[in-house]
Length: 105
Image (cartoon, rainbow, N blue to C red):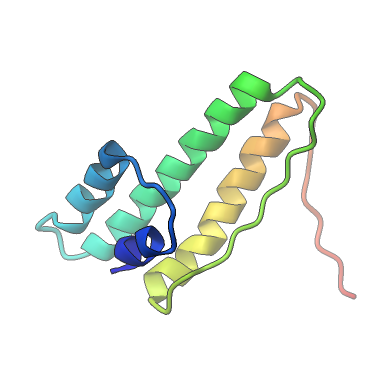
């Protein structure tokens, strides 16, 4: 349902990507929705890695924004995992040590 909604919003989803996600969603495992969410996260991480490889040193700032379009628990939880992995990918691409620190405000 979420994939249909994303397409309805006007986002182009390549057929190969759609097939990857739907293959996980239609698997006979008991946690198919979670598997589909994890596959979606993998697709996004692969896309960011390609972007960084192609344009990483060009001097154009790159930022991330991750939001949930869904009310499904697996997808909302997936947003946190997606942000964590994308953030790590971006920070690893700067080729210097990094750490995340949390501060109480």
